[in-house]
Length: 340
Ligand SMILES: NC(=O)OP(=O)(O)O
Image (cartoon, rainbow, N blue to C red; front, top):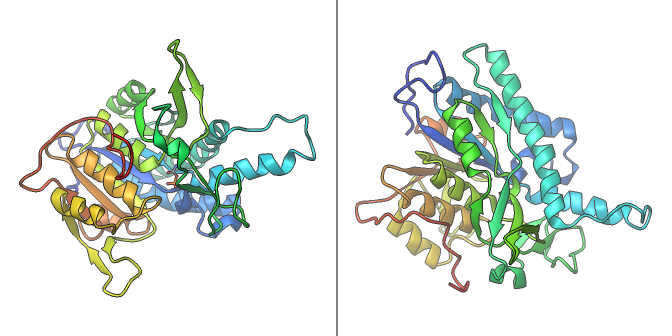
């Protein structure tokens, strides 16, 4: 549970202030599915801004990260649909689509949070949206095995042969470093709320000469969120998803929701296949990476609707290290089955 510190004069002034990272799924802004209008997306972002502003009002430092799974698929489809009509317009690679999604989703999240803080009338930290780049390994095996669904219509396909309806699977390499880590740290230290790590970050690989190039991939935002949360020394990583709590045997007879998990238990359930890749798997792996990075950390998995209650200790699944945990900072581990 996150204890509310007394109202501060300045947002960063309270000794009880903690650094909180809240990861928001791309689906959270699309309640109406693919047909959600822009106005509905703003409404969803405005609802989310209420508990986020509450954290800032209580004096905590806040980093918001967000997904882009549906939106990056829409942007890519738009580019592909336009191509035969206007061949003079450049086709967009996935790195460019991720960058576009950071712009539009950053706009939604920053403008609604800034507006909520202004309307609340208390001490107002600034809110900054940061275009974020994530370095991945050029030889990550994910490039040969696409697992990340983008676009929102159920179905299965590959990046080259999309399934009917628009959803497709694309490579999702493990994030190794975020170029803007120092900037995020500096903004948080200055009491400014940050929106960063959007869509897992624009995926880059290093060229032999040390420069970067964008690649065809969508990095998992939960893993990037854990990496950033670790790097900025966060105390709490909140991962929002479509359910209020993590379940074992999800969607099967015997389904059981969990209030808390320790590291050993989470690892065992992950190994038993309760948390599939492309959904709960990266959230659990991100949470594990974060809580085992340093002592005193906690991860919380819950829904956007359940966020206010979960932050007050009345819901969600809490992941804590447990008595036998060993701490080892570093990038997120690869999922089972990947090369070391
Ligand atoms: N990039 C990413 O992981 O997005 P979602 O969380 O929306 O799938």
